[in-house]
Each structure stands twice: as C-alpha cells, then as structure tokens.
Image 1 (cartoon, helix red, strand yellow):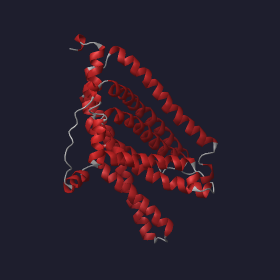
Image 2: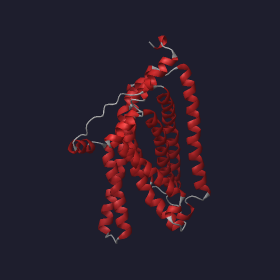
Image 3: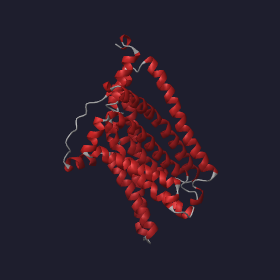
Image 4: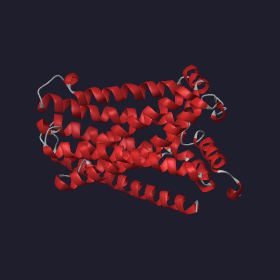
Length: 322
C-alpha cells in the first residue's frame, strides 16, 4: 500500500498520528513529574551555594535555572489541569505546540542535570561547578544534546524526502500509553536514585553515561515536536478535535495511581530522603540504623527490578511491532 502513496501523503499520515499521540497536548500532564524532580534537585544545589560558595542561593545561576524550570512545570501542570486553561490550549493548538517544545527541552535539561549531580556526588561543595571534571561533564552533556538535535534535524529532513513508513506511523499509537502514564520517566528517575548511592569513579561513569544517553534519546522527540509545531501553525488540517472529558472521581484516580509502578518509585525516593534526614538530624540508635539499611537495600532492589522489567517490556513492545 505504501508504494501507491507519495512521500507527502506518508508524512502527513505520520504527523497526524504524532500530534494525537506522542506530540499531543496530553503529554503536558507529565509536567508534574518534572516539578517533583526540580524540588528534589533544588535543596541539594541550595546547600551547595551556601556551604560551598558562601553566597545567597538566589544568586546562584544554577538555582535560578532550576527555579525557572520548577515555575514552568507548575504553570504547565496547572494549565492542563484547569478546565478553562485546557480549553485555551485546545483552541490555540499552534501556541500549545510551541509550549510543548519548551517543555521537552526543559524536561530533558532537568533530567540530565539530575545525572550531573550524581557525577559530583562525592565532590566537595565548592567545586561542584568549577572543577575540571565538572566542566568536562557539562560540556559532554551539552555537546551530546546539541549534537543529537543537529543529527535528528538532518535525519528528519532525509526522512521527509522518502516519507515515513506505516510501521513508524503505527508505532506512534503504541507509544501513546507510555506518554500519558509517564511510567518510563519515573523508572528513569528511580534508577537514577541507585546512582546516588554509588561512589567514586563508578558514580561518575554512571551519571555521565546515563546523562548523555538521555540527551541523545530525548532529542529526536524535541525535533519532531518542533516540526509538528511548524505544521500546526501553518495548516489547521493537523489540528486535533479534542474532547474535554469530565474529571474522574478522586477514588477512581487514587485506585488507578496505586496500580502504577511510578507511585512506588516516588514513595521509595521519599522514604530514602526521610531516612537520610533523620540520620543527619538525630542520633539514631544502632538497631534503627540496621533497619534503615535493610529498608534501603529493599528499595534499591525494587528500583533495579523495576528497571529490568521496564527494559524487558520495551524490548517486547519493539519485537511485537515487527
């Protein structure tokens, strides 16, 4: 069937499927995940500014950037959650598509920064941003992301000439559930917490490799969002007829949330933070320290198993689509 279609027709089918799946306004719902990540990063960089550099945390460019991302994620979350602002996005899909580009870039940035922190975990506070190694890591992260953006830009140009296959078009619909549930994002976040407990060169390699991987992996989505934004702002044929569904009862939402792995990833992270804070602030009996150790090992084991299951599911999904 593809032989009878022109590249233009194949491209149109692909991006029409893209804007209702991976590039839809509904993708903005995962902004709350980005908001949580910024709130977990900010206390650490806040202390680095105070203890390491002896400055007002609000004078730190890193803190300002993280606060900016947090505000953006909060506004995004409120925009898609409140009915009247959500309707505004539905009626101005060109504007919403541009918002999605910024959302993609900022979400990728905070995820990469999370892995950057892992590379600096055992470093003194005062050299988090100024040591040779930290500068090298930042350069590698930046060059990887920018290089991947350029690569995918030229990949898209080449793909548009030959047309997107029906297999790729169909794959957008398979990816739809993953975008809405944000399970993959939370698994990545949970796995990053394992790196937080590594030390020395192992932690540096872990953070460096995964940070570069995320930059490369998320760059293609950013490029596709940029091109879909161009289409949505120039041709209303690509606009989607969204149905504003009524809000679900909170009991139903809670029941659905408890079935998701991401919920337990968040709880595990919060429990780890709570245990660390308790040990830092109070004199903890030896028996409780041992209990904390067992709980920590159980949580880390859960993160590893969840990550392995996530990889297996990814491989199976890819195999099933062939």
